[in-house]
Length: 99
Image 1 (cartoon, rainbow, N blue to C red):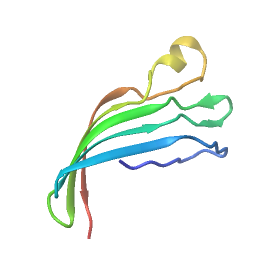
Image 2 (image 1 turned 90 degrees about the vertical axis):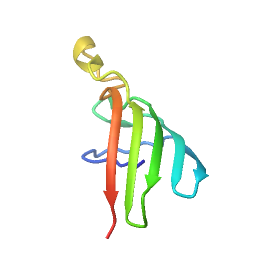
Image 3 (image 1 turned 60 degrees about the horizontal axis):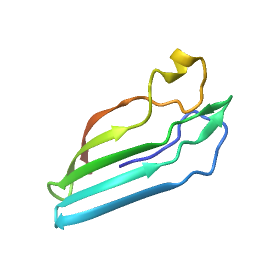
Image 4 (image 1 turned 135 degrees about the horizontal axis):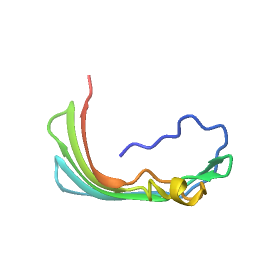
């Protein structure tokens, strides 16, 4: 999976872990966890985790399917607090092609 921080001026030290098993030379199955970061103005991203499967079709093409849990996307609006802000959960599919 790919991680990044975009559009924030404050930074925080967070824990991150990823483990993958390669049951075949072209398949990876794994889990990932990232601790939520304080991003300024009282906002803290929720911790997130995912389980994923990647298929390396060839040297250029990778297909990834993941179930991702990033926290309650409605918590900020329902409770009037920015603590542990998330964007929900669900399935994610990715197609990556490298030139």
